[in-house]
Image 1: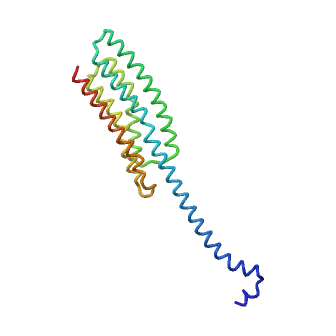
Image 2: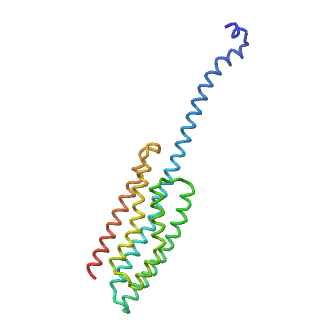
Image 3: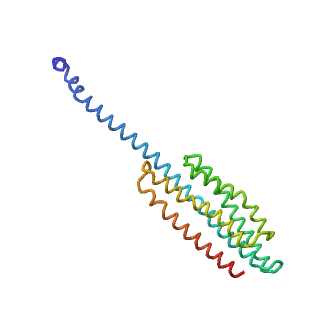
Length: 211
């Protein structure tokens, strides 16, 4: 008490204010740390959303290529219809290749900015292998060394590999450590793609029944 009484007015003010400032600073640092963690989680969530989204254009073109391949199988060789279907299929393949290049570039960017769990990385590797076999599938279609049903099945396997990534990402995004409610951001995307793929498979089935 005597020590405080001997202090100047400025010293007394500092004695009273400094402890309060220390407490405020501690809470501020804690808040900043929490905000930084939340920012990191939001960035990771954003990357997950991007990872779920980058496959969508490729899925669309693969579905169209699957359909064009079915049309080619349905046409009789050496006819005008076969020649037209071949031209349309080749045009569609070029569009698929352009989307595939974009997909690979965006995937590399996503992988460079975030770490994903084993289930997602395993899916990425599986799809990568399936896409590497795409040219072999195309050659089989051109030679008619496989039937239409086998062609549709193999295209569908690639498409479903891309779509199966969505529930894997949703499961990771609903981790309590990440932002609550993130599942709601991704679920409509998954449901929309699933409905589109189902419609595509029904069109292929209908086409095959007409062969």
